[in-house]
Length: 185
Length: 185
Image (cartoon, rainbow over the protein chains, first blue to last red):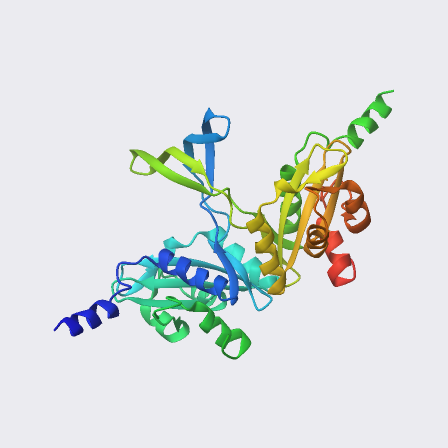
């Protein structure tokens, strides 16, 4: 009985971890194993008040969150510039496009135009499935639909399922490698 | 007399502008003219207290500056991943290496290893000269010297002077283009 409980716990170990935490662990794995150098950008903040309790210490006493001008993640893989946004949804059926800002789409347009690899990672948390959708397929959906959300079926048909692994947890580079480099890292 | 005053003002127009402001204007110029997509990363902050005066508003009431794990600037130019750190010094004779963190040097090592273009931009504010030093030449200096600062002469010999222009103000892409792409953008 203990054994099967252990197996069950192992299987669902990732449940409850956020996509952000999984991607942080994944990017750390890529970094220490010399596979890719990809970081999440810090949250942009406008600081309006800072105290200096001592000469070496600064404490922010008032600040506001700014809307990011770009996507959250970027870096390099096999010499190529990588750029993506990552989002979770609790919906079982579709991903609301309100999660992506217009300027983030424009940013991904620019990245692709300049020869970078741009994409979106979406995790449907309730069904525990994570997809990679290329920026090209994201744009195709937006250009050809009036819907305010992308149905799960579009991700199943056009996107690529990112396998849940032990390490790296959310191996999106495997997908990128198959798509753009024709093989394993 | 008015004319010569005007000319003088024009010549010294950049004085007083910080390197950061010049780079922001420069990167904006590259972006809107479709030359390159390069952004400064936001300052990393650990937030420890947030107030919500209303449902839509969040005010940070306590936060601390974190040491960045990477360099400040990255992006894409002609399909290549670009990554650099930019610093000012008031010294007329040398650039103190204490301005660069060890993990930033390691980060640039990784970037170059993975096929990106890594460099340092240093402005000597007192003499109003801005240099680009490739990560290779930066490392060569560090590996072969015990000095805690890089003399101006090293920048003059190994670095590349970035011309002060009207627009783009600090045209480092011109240097990158000559160095890595053999021509004008």
